Image 1: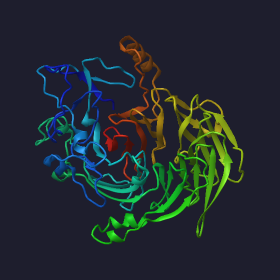
Image 2: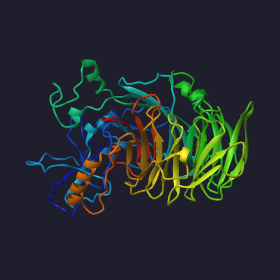
Image 3: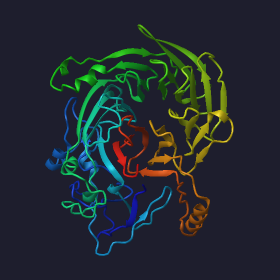
Image 4: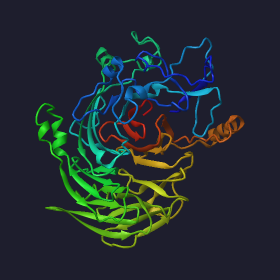
Amino acid sequence: MPPKKSKKKRSASSSAPPAKSPPPSRASGSLEETMDSLNFEDPYEDEVGDEGEVVDMKEHVEEGEGGGEGGEGAAAAAAAPAAAAPAAAAPRQAWTPGQELDSDEVLEFDASAYNMYHALKPEWPCLSFCVLQDTLGENRTRYPHSMFALAGTQADRAERNKLTLMKLSDLSRTSRARAAGEDSDDGSGDDDALDSEGEAEEEDADPVLEHLSVPHPGGVNRVRACPQRPGVVASLADTAHVHVWDLSEHMKSFENRMAGQDKLSNKQIMTHSGHREEGFAVDWSRKAAGSLLTGDCSGGVHLWKPTEAGWTVAPGWELGTSVEDLQWSPTEATVFASGDCNNDICIFDTRKPGAPMLKHRAHDADVNVISWNHNVSNLLASGSDDGVFAVWDLRAFGKEPLARFTTHTTPITSLEWHPTDESMIVVSDESAVFVYDLSIEEDAEEAAAAGGAAAAGAGEGEAKIPPQMLFMHCGSTSNKEAHWHPQIPSLVMTTALTGFNVFIPSNL
């Protein structure tokens, strides 16, 4: 859902930059932010502090504390100039990607667009992470939520990097009435008023972050967990080495926070140093447990086959250009796809090392990311460096895509099909995160009417929003990855240079 734009209040001294105010209270109104300070974060966000520490950001805010080392604190990051209620507010409009703001306009965060929204700022940027399958149940809809995630850091020095296992709990529902600055004691003005006193208390819970870390040799380019054994993870380092870890003991330790913390060890199972350059492509097979693919920037793709003692690793393919992403087929244990810097998507069979079975020039720029639909196995999505993302029917591979979207103006950095909905996909570019539903078809008459009206009032460079775009999440700098939670419907977690966001859109 696009954020709103409104007229900016002018300060008495326009030459001096406005001073940051303290984080707003939970009863505050909408936040007004400039393009320089645009940062939509929860006022009680969690912070990754010392290892093993449970951090309650509400106490930090109330006590006026800052964040951890390495940059601005989480409380400071959430601060933004508070919007004073004007005597006569100008009408607000929906902002669209590519639309330029006038000098007297700002973007406002609309918290009513979220059923749930939380943010946390780590000590170091984590530009890759994965959401972990857990034992808390399937199809969870009751608040507050709990979840597990694993992230890898990009610290300022190689020896400071680590893998961090996180448990986020008490993720409560966002209060729409309080977010709108209304008196929610009687639920008036809130169309989605809660049905019971118990549910109302869910909104008052403070999110809790628990975490454990293990040192990682070098920056983490990509980290992925094995679907059959979520505690087993593979990380690609900027040293060109691939590491496999067993963090199962660390995950179990969250069940008893007071026992055995000093006995947790660095569970690195194996290190592979056969890649010539660093890489960003890694994927575990869902059909053949333990089978792993890794790719590097020199074009090498290596196949990992599980054995009783670990894995055997063999280079099987040389693409001659950087391999940007790899994806196993959801239905065939020997088939996988690649996206590369030759603008190609290739389909391979592990029984035939060397050349791909199929190859197609899919984009006019580097293919940054690909995602294979696990509900409709003939659908593959791809995103490129020029901001285009497309959906392909592999039964007619080599022809025109089923859909091509050109709304994005920055490189596509991540895309992932919904784990249970066959037509829904989350897409991130460097400026925002988007949710599409490809089952929505555009009505020709309505499109023509809307197109004429838009042409009459649209500004230069303003992008046309496709009807399939259901939601847009803004506010982070340099988005890198977005993932669905496999067990909590419609929950999305994102990572960016400015930190993590966990949210559930109100229209999903």
